Amino acid sequence: MAKKVEFFFDIVSPASYLAWTQLPKLAAETGAEIDYRPFFLPGLFKTAGSSSPISVPAKGKWMLSDLSRFAARYVVPFRLNAKFPLNSVIMMRGLINFRGKPQLVALGDALYQAMWVDNTDVTDPAELGRIAERAGIAASDFAAAVADPANKQALIDSTSEAAERGAFGAPTFFIDGEMHWGQDRLEFVRAAALR
Image 1 (cartoon, one colour):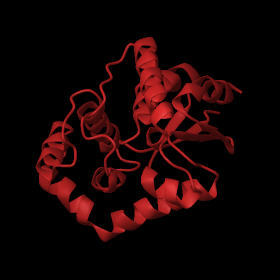
Image 2 (tube, helix red, strand yellow):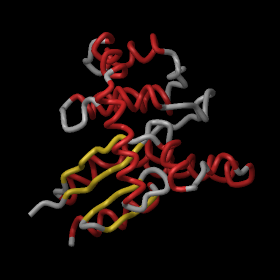
Image 3 (cartoon, one colour):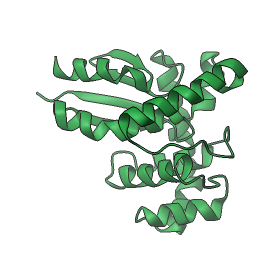
């Protein structure tokens, strides 16, 4: 029986971007189902008493070099967004509207491309509308999803659930009740999916 990998992610997380690029291959190799779980990373930091590595200058400098090394290993483009760090709540409210729907992956692809490859200003609502349209979603539908109180609550609930289950950063994976944190733990996720 195929296993389910829950993938808690936020577009603002460069490590989540790198993991995102590898998940289709992991799913193909293991037969696992990927359950994409949008959540709000800054909210998790607050709840879990954690913080972004970028907030520690020496760690932030190292982290950016390390992310570039992993991008080269995965053979994927990676460029630090000029607006980073930024508030991702608008993107994540829009994205969570499509959880469990086919549009989620296309929208996630478009948002990650804009954020970590094209250096797009993803804080601009008009730009987010154009990104949504590239994913096949009308800008007006994306804007409505962002404003929908149900999606605001769904994002809060997803973030709270991640914290309650022990998450403290992104990406966080759960498989068979076991948590793995960080895109550099994908080998552990792969092994768990094959057990």
